Amino acid sequence: LVKEQESKANLLRSTLPDIKSLFSTNARQLNPDFEYINYRGYDGIKDILFNLLQAKNNLYCYVVKDIAELLYQRDFALWFEEFLKKKFDIKELVTENYWLGIQAARSTKLDQIVRTETKKVPRNSLDIHFNQYVYNNTVAFITWNRDEIYGTEIVSEKLSFLEKQKFDILWRNL
Image 1 (spheres, rainbow, N blue to C red):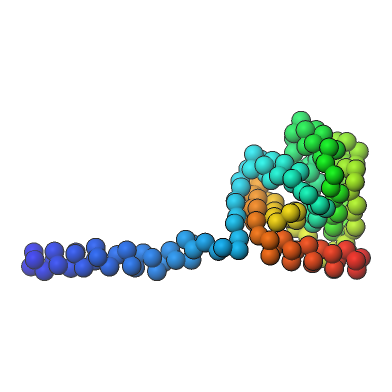
Image 2: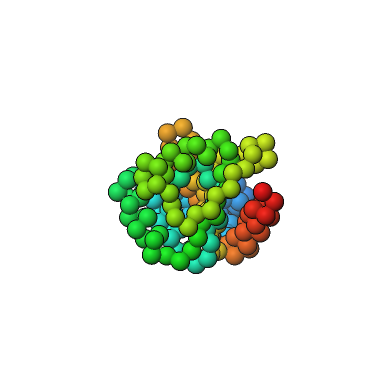
């Protein structure tokens, strides 16, 4: 009986890595077309927003909350100071129901973000519920869940190119 149990235990030990890999395959596979970073909390979101300043061309945005709403006043002042030194413009699409909140945030900070062109989208056409930023080869998202804030940056030439194309189609048709 003891030898039989030892034999079963050895068989389990030898097959366990194969069984484990079946359950974790999807979680551990890396996609060569996508590099992503997940963030949680204020400091992570601050990192994402300051990364936007690396844009080489236009910054394309779907927004629910303005950067002025997302950063503390001191951090926003630093962000804005750096933005003024940059050469890129911001194009943003905002669902109508969030536009008043964004305007209010801008009026309490530094009036308006210069070099920003905004188009309001009817809610029945496009109902935006999180912030998305597209620049260089990066697509960044900021979302909220109850009292917590999350962000993800996806670095992908193919995805960012597709997102810029979709943005341009919407922009031209508004």
